[in-house]
Length: 260
Ligand SMILES: [Zn+2]
Image (tube, rainbow, N blue to C red; front, side, top):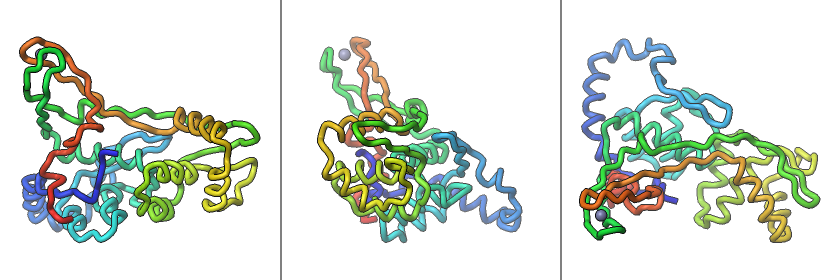
């Protein structure tokens, strides 16, 4: 996964923060009276719900610097910027909202990549504007059926529970499984199960059934992509890239050594 909040250094938005600081000081007395709709002027649709959000402010960067856990960092970067700060988001939804906040906070930010043309070998600069390439795949949750199993899934309900479950998992396979389990609302007509119980059931499941369930899950879960194109200035060859998989997906200065 390209997103690693543990390495974020927001020095790149310093300029923006400074601008907002000045504005906040000047209008300090009226800030409290801003209606919510103006405080959270942006919105996006996410798996049947509307998420309203604002851009980053100085206080968000301060909270990010102070953050001790990954969950604290996620609050500073995303949850505190939402009209409903308790909105429960799975990790892909979180990343997608993070990008939207980033794109609105840095509307003119362009990331430069050095590309080697796979046709003629020319090395050139390709500028990527993430607002242009970020694309979501909203889907509908339906019932998963495989073998003796019928599983109903829905949006994550409890942010704190989800974040605490997912926070310290470093193994990607395990993270994907826990994330799936926390989407389950009904398992073989039962709603009174614990996450631990489901983990045990999945651990002892036949591989084939498990694969089938996950194939169905992946076809209905929310996802997004970051596919962009770069054109070689020498031969006009157009190369397609998924920028999620490129090392410097983020501006380097965001993910500095920084020590955050
Ligand atoms: Zn070329």
